[in-house]
Length: 462
Image (cartoon, rainbow, N blue to C red; front, side, top):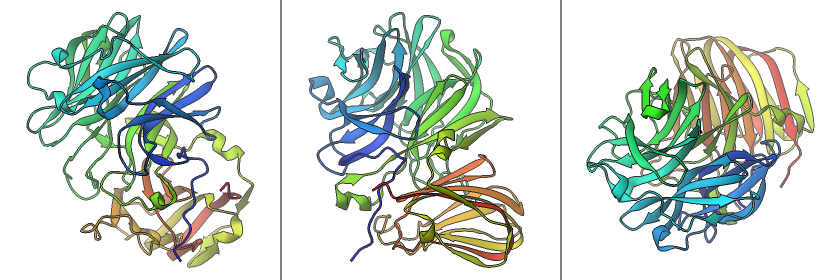
């Protein structure tokens, strides 16, 4: 009998059906709102709807049902593709893509209560007549809406007919009537796909983080673009009225793991957050046997010293049943994590080592380092269910170029089948689905010193 697959407790997960990209991450009427691409009929990709989750604290999420469903010719046959949301006066506005067979168009829906969403009768608000020459109407999607000084700016990813893709900027006086403004960001010609899910996080009036998910971007060496679909950010100077963005940093990946895609960014008060899909394309999805597939993840982010730092949301620490700390450990040590509660845990520690070391979680999720190498390796072994498709069996390791250190800090969040690892206080992140055979051990190997070990756990919420 196959091992049980535990649903995540703190990651938004549908009761049934399939989800992928997060959409419409926003704060409205006292709650965080998060939508996602959704097929309610089967636990696999299909005609896209928007599922709706709400939360008071970014930790506990409640499924609210379907916010958008494909029903009009401009959304058929493929559905309501990704987009974003903004509070505008008393309304919550949703901007999304209507996916036709050979064309993609941009659409609008609104709500006055955060529960019922009404589509604009004049949809689509942007179609092929708005595109400049040299772009493909078939790959014109994922609108990001920004309002600044009474004017609305909309960014979309658009593919060129051959290689290459851009993010285009449109502007509007009312959020409905948009005109082409500029090529906001031009992707390199090596990308054989679209710059999906563009987002813009304004840090001040003149600087921003631009994020997007380039399809089929080739690797530039070990530890870079290890998935067929990746997600990056670029820090730069911005002037929205002119539609101008000047990159000041290279494209940098958010996460070096197996399962992270399509992040969406939110600034609320003094805090900034991201929501992302805790999966990726071209995989097996073992939880589908239980009638649902995949989850979203939430992190807090900040930009300091030309580096994006990520952490788990602060309120998470309020909800553990127990927290145990341990004195310094040396050489090989094994913990039976089954003694520390259920399938949701947070493990924090620092490794000091001048030799090779290896850390094994859940019976086969292995983090290792060869002394003198700049890379940490994350490898999935001994799983109850195969996560890679036939022909991908050797694609089982991801690398993080974290530097030639002998001192690493790890913050590991295990929630059901999801394992998120934050390294060196937010400098690097690795997200992976992992399907344990039931082994809950934590094993340290190598001539190491383990300091600050803390294990927090939650009794199963299944």
